[in-house]
Length: 204
Image 1: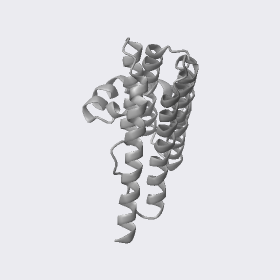
Image 2 (image 1 turned 60 degrees about the vertical axis):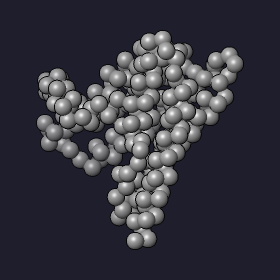
Image 3 (image 1 turned 90 degrees about the vertical axis):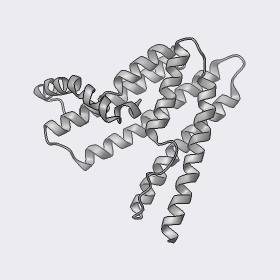
Image 4 (image 1 turned 30 degrees about the vertical axis):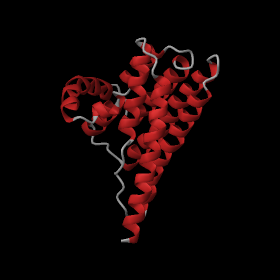
């Protein structure tokens, strides 16, 4: 879903909605960090409550709506001139937790089906591990002075695959296992891409 928010045109349209909300929250003394934490906690709660029980449509709608908190906290920080490295760190850290919670919730759903969808669970686990590795490799590379933004599936793409698969499954076309197989493949490929990229940069 965040990939939609990364689109300049979409962000411009959404900012017309988000900015008045941000100004109202500022008047109520709500900080950007508070919005970041609320968005993460609420997203995790929705994933844990709705996804394992198969309520994919409400899960996709609520998670999609809560993704706007990524835009809202940034707007509050900009309007209050409170952008900080701590805020960026907090946002990035909670993103990892949210990603894990959503994928674990999907794996929990596969675990409750009859028969248990073992291959889908394994694919989800691979997607979870490789998704976390993708972010770790970039952070570690940058700590060594190497830029590492390459790769087929960054967080925006991974998030969109999960969100759209939940939405489509909720609308009646159950594609969640296929989406997890796809996610496992593209996240693994991305890890390989980044490892090769970092090796080339460090050995050049």
